[in-house]
Amino acid sequence: MADLPEQILLLVKDKNGIGTDEVARTCGCQHQNIVGAVKSLQALGNLINAEQRTSKHWEVTKEGLEVVTIGSHEARIYSLVPESGGILQAELMKAIPNAKVGFSKAMSAGWLEVDKKVEGGPKVLRKVDTIEDNVKQQLEQVQRGDIDGLTDKQRNDLKKRKLIHEVTVNTFFITQGTEFSTKVTKLETDLTPEMLVSGSWKEKKFKSYNFDALGVMPPSGHLHPLLKVRAEYRQIFLEMGFSEMPTNNFIESSFWNFDALFQPQQHPARDSHDTFFISDPANAHEFPMEYLERVKKVHSEGGYGSQGYKYDWTIEEAKKNILRTHTTAVSARMLYKLAQEPEFRPVKYFSIDRVFRNETLDATHLAEFHQIEGVVADYNLTLADLIGVIHAFFKKLGMEKLRFKPAYNPYTEPSMEIFGYHEGLKKWVEIGNSGVFRPEMLLPMGLPEDVVVIAWGLSLERPTMIKYGINNIRDLIGPKVNLQMIYDNPMCRLDKQ
Image 1 (tube, helix red, strand yellow):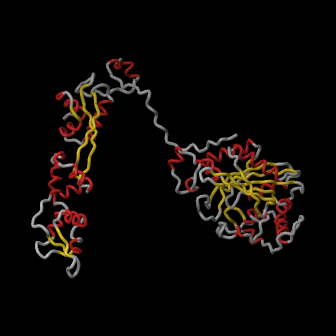
Image 2 (cartoon, one colour; image 1 turned 30 degrees about the vertical axis):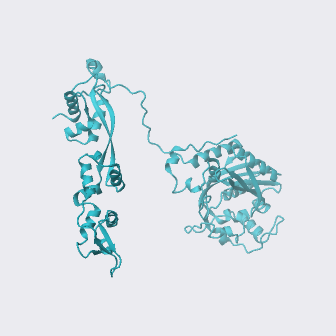
């Protein structure tokens, strides 16, 4: 027996044109298989012509087929009501599935009535002696293909009850092409050395090259938008002459995260409600002891012109390991390292990495996010220098709507919160913090007295949200991110100036 493509060619030759639906019935195959065979024949050249045609017809649904077999819901409800005496409505409604629909239709048709004065609940009685199951008859008519015999109201009622549905069928009408043949000859796709040597290529037919076809995209990963934006920020820092700090320690001791920054051990930020503490290992052990003693003294007794906090500073609290709450801990390490050099040199540092805070999650807060930090250490810097550097930084990002608000930080004085205008939320959103590091933080490290360090920190996520109108941070990072957005969105384009 010939294979399916050759069967189709034979039918086309005999009938001089045939529809794929008729081919499916003749061959006893599914229509989709016939369509696949037609597509393969079209790929062989001009063997056939295939004209697509669309037709619509009505079919009985699965529920409708059940009605054809056992009767409509209303007819079945009617048959369950005894000829005399009736039946309790509550009992009738439990008798069959879709009893509520059947009862409603039977009542509308005037087949049944309800006596509400009967003891024990309403009773359903027959109102007529005989009925005619018109719904079943109409569905049988649809099965026979006589949908035109129904009125528009009858058809719409059956459709509304989901007993019939309209089916759209796409078929092809096949006729002979200019190269028609009843034999399927496979076209060659490659010109081989053997064909050239033997000369057999002259008798063979080759498949035409489709120069307009797009190549298959190779499977590959896609960078998260934050990584793309991070690369842009990093380039801006490098253009401004900053050097990147090493930030490969997510776990930090409380000493470097808090104490070295002149943050008291009773500060609310050091509470478990704001900080993630590590259980294993719970404590750090190696510290620069001379520096640690100076930090202890400035906290408990004061010094360098400061009266300190006047409390009993304990090394046990400083040893506690945490998930770092800010990358300023890295800045403290780098400034201490700078202070140990024989001669001070001005520096500009930056870092971009993850930090962790025990935050309540909302549209602008996550427990894990990225912090961008810039630090400039030089002689006789002022608050004006800090504002100027921040404006220059954000201008390169294409963000010029900035505001500054006085704030308090344990390790900077003066301090300022940085706000940017969010076009999507139509309001000012806090995007960072800034300030001038206090002498109580810098002088214990060993830096010269006239050296001033200005710094600012901001999240990576919030400026990205502002720039691209994202209203919820959880749409940008976390388990609810739409991966298709990562595939499609070129979010690394900033209007840099």
